[in-house]
Image (cartoon, rainbow, N blue to C red; front, side):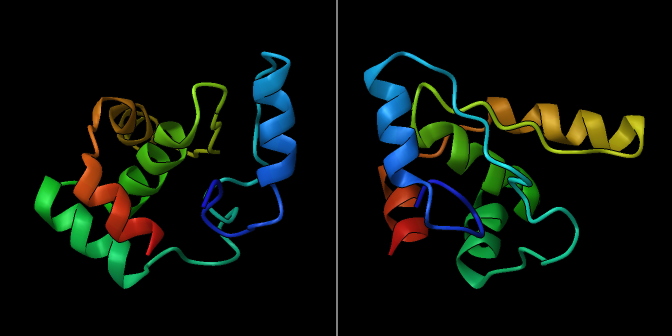
Length: 100
């Protein structure tokens, strides 16, 4: 639930939270190797008028105050899209749907 692709990180994240350390997931959006076009992400993205990548980043950021997602980018437009994810507010319904 803390990472879009790998679910082996929760224990490390919990430890970071205990010690007030930032947690930076490696390839938070799959690094371009594994697309994130999951149905649940797409449904939430459509409701918010956002991309699936923006919802995935917002989901990561909502998972913990210690989360520091640093997705790669190859263009200023993509950078702007990634930054906009920080302003996307996922409510309890969205988060429940994503973690189902």
